[in-house]
Length: 253
Image (cartoon, rainbow, N blue to C red; front, side, top):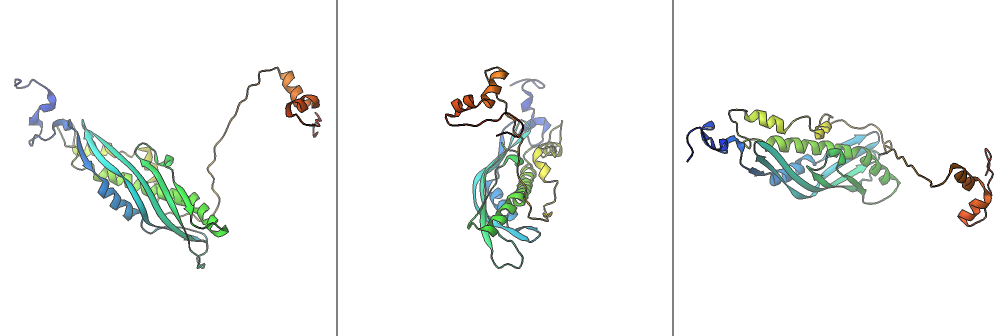
């Protein structure tokens, strides 16, 4: 046995009256799977997504598979979660319409490894026609953002709920300080929580995900040779192996 004041500081039990997980050094874990499944069912029940001449609802969570855990190691909170979710939704293009179209929303990769804006969300419709495709496009434009906002609420509540009593206070920090660090609002996922979950789009619109694509091609020839290939009819015919007419003038064919 080491003399008083000597030895590994991880085992200095007088820093905690109950001598429990001194300095939060040892691995502790909480299973959040059951709580998560119940919370998903609550969050995705009858979620309205309405706009001008369109009325959509996420009815319920149809399928939910995966797991979630909260861990403490050396005073650091670590959350693991991996989920595959399937949601049922329905919608009407006109509030006076009696035709209700149904579809599904698939979330195959909700995990701590992906930022919320990278989480894949697929929208499908059961029967395809002009009206149902318009509703599908509306859910793609606005429904996916609503789903991401709800997923952000789940992640925030998971970290707050399962931080309790997982980090124990010591002489250098308090439990509240550790929990605050684990649920920091600097997390990129919280950007979606800054938006109101009750806000709704006003138009059907067409919002597209776009990217800027730049392509560079290097030709292993002189500029004069490249010009001739593109402007001389005999060289164009040799390349295409078919008759070609080339007029190397402004407005030419």
